[in-house]
Image 1 (cartoon, rainbow, N blue to C red):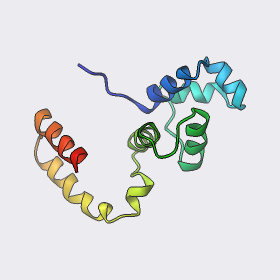
Image 2 (cartoon, one colour; image 1 turned 180 degrees about the horizontal axis):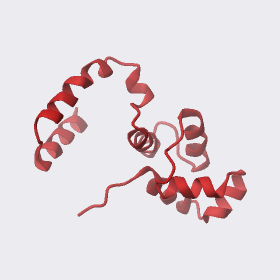
Image 3 (cartoon, rainbow, N blue to C red; image 1 turned 30 degrees about the vertical axis):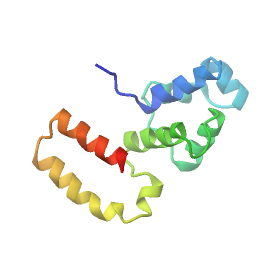
Image 4 (cartoon, one colour; image 1 turned 30 degrees about the horizontal axis):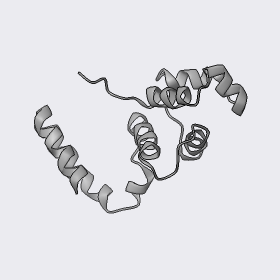
Length: 122
């Protein structure tokens, strides 16, 4: 069974890919090691857009690529926020229908996987 990727685990994974230990990363970019450690362990909620963008750049994520979007999507999901680009579209107006549907019926994992596949293909 695949473990669900969290914002913190993804942050840590990308930091390690840079070849930096936590303290090295924080010293290099003048960040608080305690706060970054809390982020990576899921003890601190992901920050909002501007700080998140700064962290993404420090982690060498390229704007617009899959890792960039995953970083922001994981942060938004864990913080209970809707990603900025989705708030600006008609999607938000349609979300209550999805929420009511999900709340009213237990959806099997296989049906949810099919829905995700369908969304990815469109």
